Length: 167
Image (cartoon, rainbow, N blue to C red; front, side, top):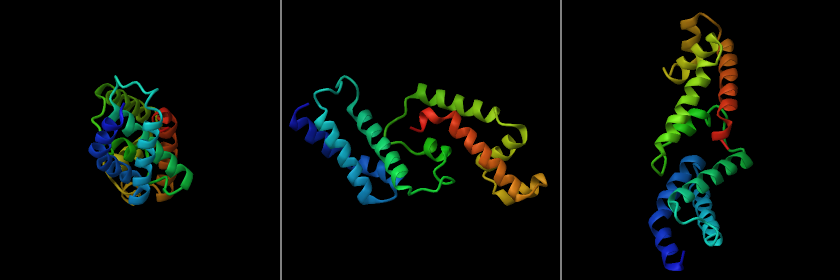
């Protein structure tokens, strides 16, 4: 990759990648810094990167990983907010690979099916039917604490089952 190609790529993709990073960081300066680091890394590794693959995919993956590392290192997130569904439903900067998307959907479906019955029911009511804990407690005639406990177990199970996709 020569300097002119790199500059053109930077001009074309920088703004979109900053927006993509902002979806994770919720901070424009941090998003911009992360995106700049991704471009710097691309330039430094230009000799060893396989240019037969899409460079946009490389950059968006690098930005995503840097954002997740930043979130982890700075503990700027609430685990209830930054959960599996938010990461997977996030509007991606690039078009997702349909095979990978189908594989992830199957893994999520299997992970939900593997939950104990009551735990699964509570998880589905909350995550798919968008019911609040209080509403679930009333509907199922259980305490809010029970709902919280079951959701905690369900989310832990989902994190474990989807660990390879959350790195």
